[in-house]
Length: 288
Ligand code: BEZ
Ligand code: FE
Image (cartoon, rainbow, N blue to C red; front, side, top):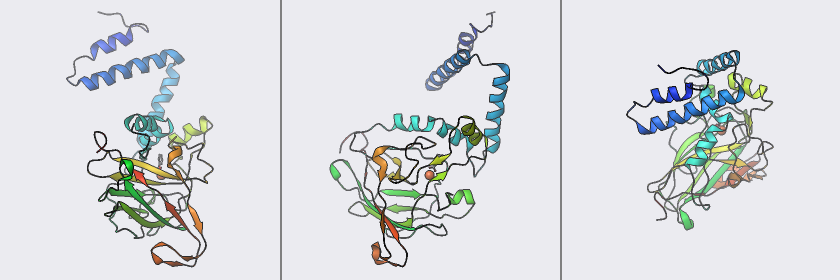
């Protein structure tokens, strides 16, 4: 029988874990055990510290339910989500970069026609968004499915408020690849921080804020799926996003307009904003 001690334990665990049929799972678990053990040795983790760690992870699980995904938040604030996103979405420089999905995506958003207003009961300054979905070289991509979602003026998503869909919707790009909709001006907001992940941020001396953004998930036949945001260029948190999701190429200007005639011919008695942003998708398997 092998002697189990601080030197031999890693090899003993790895030797015991070679039997599973899935090669990829074996590779991932071997590396995970090696890195976890290396981390434990590196910091000289004590029994009391690991008991705290278990307590923390237990609270993360207890905070997670249909409306709140504390594990995604943990992955986000540790930069793990952004690392996975970055290494999974390498593409030509011309293509729109990806960023984190976040915990507030829902797959059952209502469908709208281009030009429609998705704000519903969400409060905020009126905002008109338009753009084109393109492929490399600027070729328009008609028939692309665009899913859009954003927080309201108070920084909350409909799903956090337990509401029906507000400020989220699904569009299809037209024959010229164009899309357009009315919504509200996004504002910076704090990620949920009344749970263990918020406690962790506090211990680390970090704030919970994300710069104002609009979420997009774009799918079109023959192209890689794109999950991304567009960020407001005047936001004070661009350099300190709590989840490290900002990429310079995704920052855009929302232009403020005085009351008057808005896109689609709407007459507004309040100031409104416009955003124009084009997305360039990466063809599956190279250029088409
Ligand atoms: C979001 O942008 O919706 C989000 C991303 C990561 C954590 C919390 C929120
Ligand atoms: Fe968001």
